[in-house]
Image (cartoon, rainbow, N blue to C red):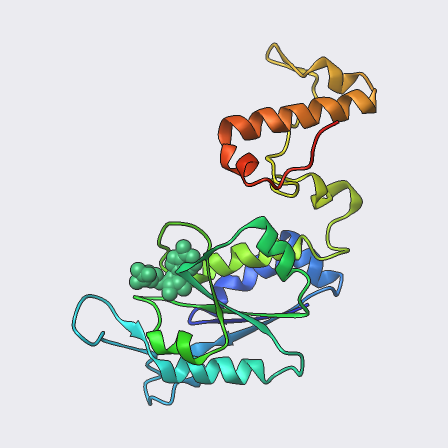
Length: 233
Ligand SMILES: C[S@@+](CC[C@H](N)C(=O)[O-])C[C@H]1O[C@@H](n2cnc3c(N)ncnc32)[C@H](O)[C@@H]1O
């Protein structure tokens, strides 16, 4: 999969894209990351990309011209059409099922905002979906784009090894994951549930399923209400 990331601060991505799963995906040749500096597309002699909001008010708004030019130039750099995403707190809330959907694409283009955000006409002019990573406001779309890249990359077949498989992770079957334990079996007097030491995989699976249900019910009953869960035996 090819990722095109458009930002005013592309250097923010340097360490992130080389580390952990995004880095492993890159090393395995399963992804390519192409960073684009929106400022490079400004026709202003000072490379200015923002201006004061019409109607007054605080902050600066990203201007149409550099953003649209950057988008069109990046989109044209590969013949595969890109599924384009604008990171904005006003978009549809990003969820695991969206990540799974995006992981099936051949190419994603992520547009990161800054300051007071984008001139509204950019959203009207470009073929772009608006995605939010949650109900809070970040200073820029870069950390939101990292959330999307990370969640998507780990679902691309071949990125995770079998032992790290995403199939058991929270949200993959509409529930939170069961509690996990590792050695030692007793730490400061606190033991691990007996069943996990039993070697009986049928019972272990049953226990995990029940614990996942209990935990989801207590912490995120909305997930159970949404009807995405598979029935337990
Ligand atoms: C300070 S925010 C602008 C917020 C905008 N004035 C508003 O109230 O909707 C600057 C940029 O950060 C990014 N951003 C902030 N919060 C975000 C979120 N929850 N999800 C995705 N992107 C976000 C967007 O790219 C946005 O253009």
